[in-house]
Length: 346
Image (cartoon, rainbow, N blue to C red; front, side, top):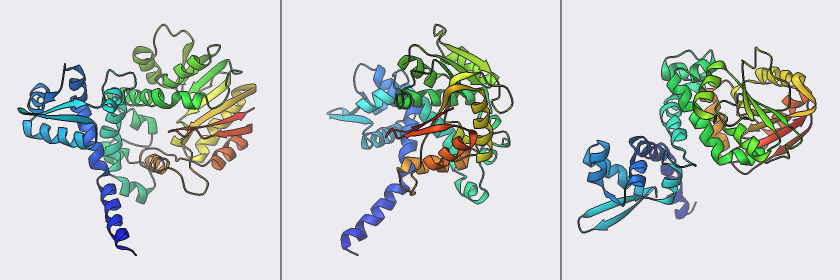
């Protein structure tokens, strides 16, 4: 082993060790409103001015700002009277609440919910089940009862979903030509971010969002514009209640929540309701068949262990589930982004 290798291995491990420190710096700056304040200000601000306006300690804020400079989330200019900070392009675009591409709520969900569950990753590996009960003291027997444990948490989760679709929804909806499907049902479509991408790309289509009653109520009140007449809602539990007839069913980030038996139950129900010639579009992060692939796909699979009853799957695993339910002509499209797409036809 060369001396270069001797030096590189510890450096790689130190980078891994610091991963959660990096994310919490970014999350904390978002939560305190650092990026929003700097966006609204007429120019760069000193750390003392930022601390005063945001109600924090001067010492703590200065260290947080310097860490953000190290992460290239802030720029700094040294003047005779001290250091002055301003947003970089990436923070203005993605970390401010007012930006159309904002990921603020996405990161707050990670900071408050995902981070809390991942404190119990060791227990999840030992037990083979999600950790909502340990993290939050709520029963995890009802998965969505745990996820939607309060209205505040439900709103946070719905914002998180919409912000994801704002940066990757178009990629999965455009993965296949969906123009032949004029009546689309988005099962578990929640806040409507993906439904809005559908009607934007396919102006001759209408979308029905099918979700739990409390989710539908919140989506109509806070997320889907009232003037968007081509999006309608249907309340129900897709495991227990009838689902609407449609040309195409969208299952986006749904199947990875459930074990194989639940996925089979749902897919069989979708196949039965699907019109002849129709289909199902599955949107998920796909694992590679040979166990390689992106780090993100591996981490998402761990997240399913910690937070759900399901897992991420390979294209072959989804193919088997869809084929067993009756779907044919199954196509897989890797988008190169966060999520991939699978289309099966009836």
